[in-house]
Image 1 (cartoon, one colour):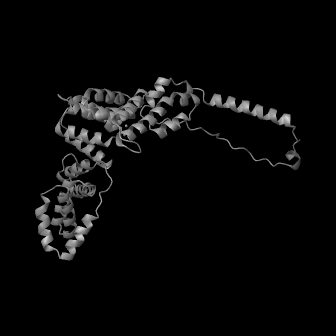
Image 2 (cartoon, rainbow, N blue to C red):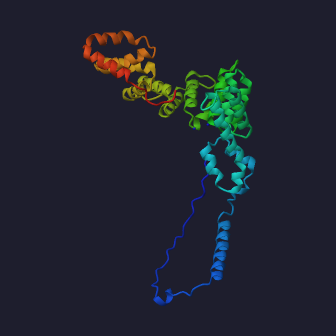
Image 3 (spheres, rainbow, N blue to C red):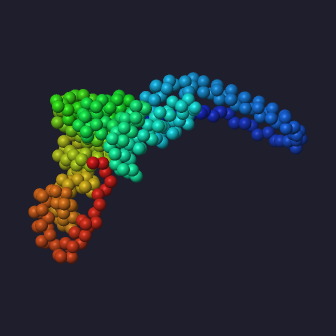
Length: 342
């Protein structure tokens, strides 16, 4: 939702102090009375305060208008809001509505999914809308999702647009997808928002943008750019992009022809649970004579619904001993997909 304000690095002095020997006489200091000590502390405090004011001259964070600050922090997560609230009292006061919104978002998710409370979609939507009213883009997106599921598309798009304008990548992505799925669709507007989400690092947006470039939908056909976005989404962990990236390398379309890279991305997609990738990788292992590994991936593909894997898998099983077949099925039964984005 793919925002940080850091203080300037303080510059230290370029000079070092000369070390003078301290004599025993110099080291003797008269004892101060209690009133004298308090007076010295007070003078030091005033001096330190004046230095602090001078050092922040031209960087008065507290003078930032509340509405500007809230727009900047609209897509912040709760940990980011907590850190920003520590900058100064003014920021702490200004960001209070967004911190309250985060609490409402948390309760909205609990009501929506029945986590620790009885599932209640009305209360979930109410919580999200209250969070959205306080300026949180996370709440806007969640409320938009609920409206979309309720077939209230216009209300959903309105909330997505609010979040998108405030720079939330999830809002930008959802708005782009909404334009693609609208009747009639608005592919050009969709591509604009998908691009904004993509450059912010939203991997699903990167994949959808690549599809639009690949198909020439809402933008001129550009296979090189499509392949570049497939690769970025694949590197971000999006399994469908891994499969398409492998195909680009395999046929040299948009990316340099590289069977090594094609195999790497196909195996990665297969290990993440992509059924077609499991079929393709299994067939590749079969042609290389890796029968045990091949039958494992082909059985996984079969269980994922790829019926084309059945014939080759059965041919391999007939060539294996009963012990090898049992071992292969045991591997399949204990197999778990690698973490990825779907």
